[in-house]
Image (tube, rainbow, N blue to C red):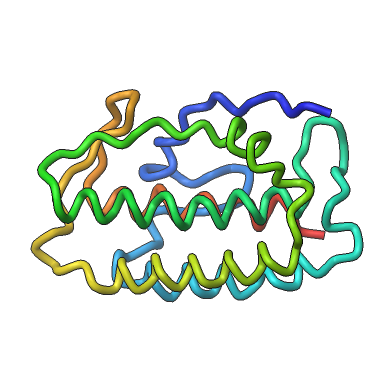
Amino acid sequence: MAITPDTKNWTWVVEKPCPDCGFDPAGVEFEQIPDLVRANAARWPAVLARPDVAVRPDDRTWSALEYGAHVRDVFQIFRERLELMLTETDPSFANWDQDATAVAENYGAQDPGVVSAELVAAADEIAVAFAAVPADALDRRGLRSDGSAFTVRTLAVYFLHDPVHHLHDVRG
């Protein structure tokens, strides 16, 4: 069954709390990002070990496995985006269609153990990358394909909301 693509612009999460998952950007300091990423990633192996990990709860919602594969890819994509921001001047990010990726990579049929290991490894890589950002680079900019501008600082908050929100999605 196909999932209706999410076409919302979630950039508002850098300015106000998410009413769904409770993520509050005002409570996040840049220096906390690596620890928050690792803490989030540490909760995913238990989710991905559930016996029903590949079962969708309804026709409109990804399974926990699909969310886990997505979060793994979010960690990888945002590490690449952070690297671009630190090495280029005002880079533009290629558009990433998460729904097309989920279909093309067959998220729902991936091995949960492999997804779990890859998610934790990708989380560590981006945590290390954020920890290495020098203070004088926090205001470097990057642009989404829709023109939304981020600084390294706001990209970190925007990025962090995604795995937090998806962990909320798979609670249970």
